[in-house]
Image 1 (cartoon, helix red, strand yellow):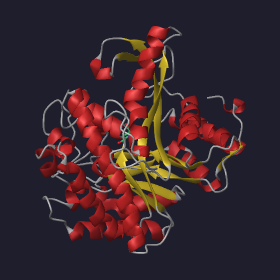
Image 2 (tube, rainbow, N blue to C red; image 1 turned 60 degrees about the horizontal axis):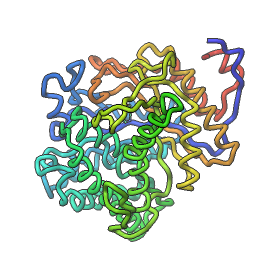
Image 3 (spheres, protein in one colour; image 1 turned 30 degrees about the vertical axis):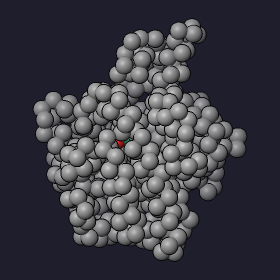
Length: 439
Ligand code: IFM
């Protein structure tokens, strides 16, 4: 690449940087969650691998924290596995909580501030078998889990994500049938969404309540990691603009509105507030990867439009368009309405050969610098992901890591782009020297 055309730039001094992972994708060893069962069915995982292996992070977390330190992380977003914590309905395992306490304490000793996700695509099997998120009891069960976890870990963690990418979870699990529970039923999807929304709101309230009651240190901040995309019409025709808007509404704006303010718009409701009007987020969590070009088509699985990649656009290994400007556009649009500090809770690239990741990082961070200069408070960046991991239906072949992992030996190797990222984390800037060295 031609480094000469690229300008050095600076991020705000108080900007925090690190990386993100989720429990099911890296821990390995848990047979009690929905993904373990899903992996056992032939054809569900494209390369035939299983989350049972993962990165063996459950046993190797000290080594992984050491690597975060080498990459100069200030922050780390991690998940905890509900199916380990509550292996049977109503039975909580204190040993598991002690394990997470040890992991969190080690992060803090290394001056890495954790942001903990309670739900990231995976459920305990007992929960799924009672109807999962379609069952109204799911809400109260999630709140009981929240209560148990936050009371136990809340002295070490002041920042929480209740639910990761509720839209992706529901679309893949209930509409496209590609993830557990493997349904293709829009009614089931919206039923599950209303329960997830109620669960988020009450979990938000519960986390604040418990941390006040126990006088836990640090400012409590709770939010959702929303998967946000750009949906652009394929051309300027109204017939394509309308489906682009509908898809944005049904797969994105509806989620932000209901989970953010408690407002149940159609098709969740008729605009009422079942739990009262409120503001149920302390930051706006954005997971950003790509954009879709939309054309009118009768495709219920795509919420009534056909999604394409822009012609001749650069793409990652999975064929997703690389579109850094999209991050800028999304942050501007949603900040106007939601007016909260923005955390980029995920952003990254599937790039096995590591030929595009460094440039990807440069281009996206440049958009963040631009946003901050324009007064949009993007406070944090969590790169997805710390290391290669179990990439859901793609299995072990979807490689998003700053650190490469050999799943056979569990040998970690920091990629060149990882070294670049580590230097940026240390300096909060990209210098001319770094451009020449890495880009
Ligand atoms: O690996 C996933 C993650 O679990 C959720 N957000 C997108 C990532 C890359 O596909």
